[in-house]
Amino acid sequence: MHVLPYLVSGWILLVGMYGLATSRNLIHAVGCLAVAQSSTYVLLLSIGFRRGGTAPVFSDVPTGSVVVDPVVQALALTDVVVGATVTALLLSLVIQLHKRHSTIDPDQLNGLRG
Image (cartoon, rainbow, N blue to C red; front, side, top):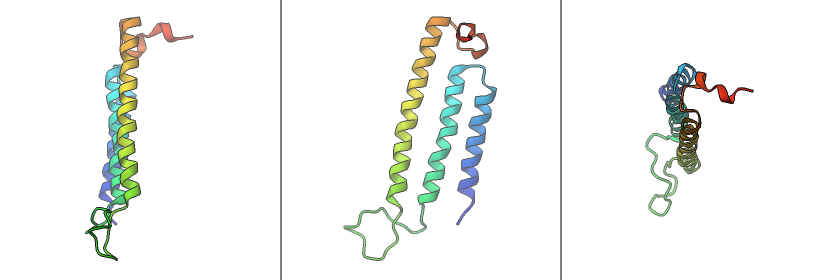
């Protein structure tokens, strides 16, 4: 078991969270959220990786050979789709905020305060 992919995943998550916490631009914040979310790709792929494993297509693989986990691959693919969808939705909300308030700085959005 290698620790490096887990460390890389944690580092990507921390970089994204730092950018999200220090951002003064909502588009930048959405980008940082996408970076933080992309750390789950590395995490899922490192969980499902098996050295010397092949694709889980069992018609061409002899019995007893090592294959990668197809469930983790499906989760990673679902993660990519959900991440792209959430990013697109958040960017559309930022566009609507810019149209209504003429700013994308979270500190200047006074109309959203109660």
